Length: 248
Image (tube, rainbow, N blue to C red; front, side):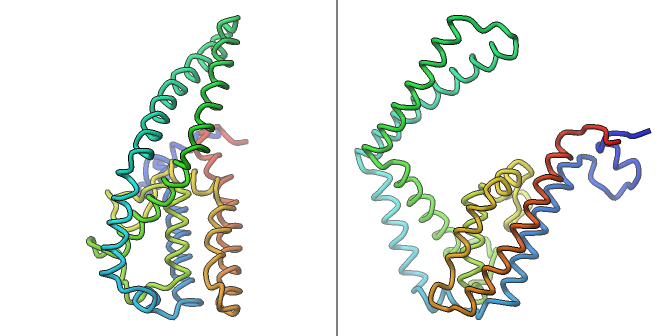
């Protein structure tokens, strides 16, 4: 008899009870192996110290982030967008509820019109204020400060190279915040799904490293191609593990 994946632990007590923890481990292991490959095949070491005066760049990035976050236009646009987003989430919830309960009527049409209006309003605010672009700058600065400040000793700045830095940044940008509970740079299962769904964006960003070094760029692209193929397979495996359906 075929049994759900959740019973895997009964076959091997060393396995986690939840298959999503297995999936999470697979993805984080892939990312760690990728970092090791980058260290071995591409990195020359010392890139950060060669590229920046670490202390000065942390101070400059901190001031820049503060200046951006405290501008009147940015704060106003951010407040408006948050307010619209909350209303949009409520509207989506009502629409989904009516669809699931098969109770769609004229009220559903009104909700859909409101949804479209709210999305359009968000777009106009974003275009007028560039708040989306500014948020990306703020997030990038936060990541840079976290990395260079290195308060938790999670990385060895002296050994970090450009390719590993960009891949790590891409992982966090398109996956989400790293799991502090585990330390290091692990992602939770939900963020692993998000990362793998955005695998093409990760590759596009990471492949931008070593623009002035053709040999390293070729190796970087080859490793990213390998990572992408593994990520594609893991995305399919992860969806199967998440579904919990019996397999015949």
